[in-house]
Image (cartoon, rainbow, N blue to C red; front, side, top):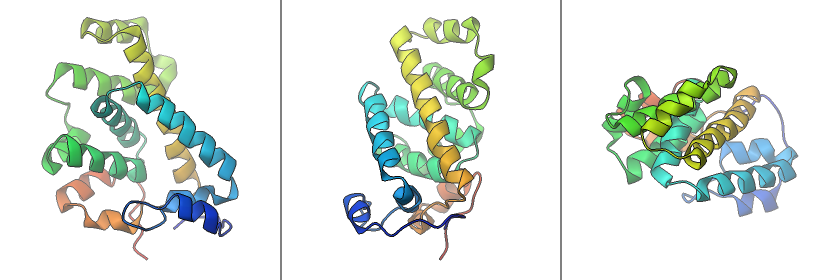
Length: 186
């Protein structure tokens, strides 16, 4: 499930059960540092509340797949498939650019922030502005991608595998979104 051992924290686990009733593996990873996990939840919530959910999920998926984070790719791909697209459409977003030019631009920018933020240029920002994004919108995409880098790299750096529950996703979606560590099978 992870390379590190963490304490059993029934209070943390009970407060952070997934809707299906299980304790996500990432919660178990953060059990040794619950204050960091709470701070992460606050940061992530603040970023999400300023953005349209679909745009947040697209930026997050783009950052997660670029960093080869299966856990985050599966989680956010599942949200996109549940709320906005078919499973096949989400699976295609991993390899093919989005059809909508704004979505395509947002995803490309989020990937660049996640992988090489130091290479972002004024031209990159101007491209998003030409698509109708405001400075605040661009900051939101940047925040979503940068925050995803923290969370994804923490999970991958500790060897935290995606929850076994992701085995229940449609095969096409599960296969496309498993871009790094395999889903926990045990």
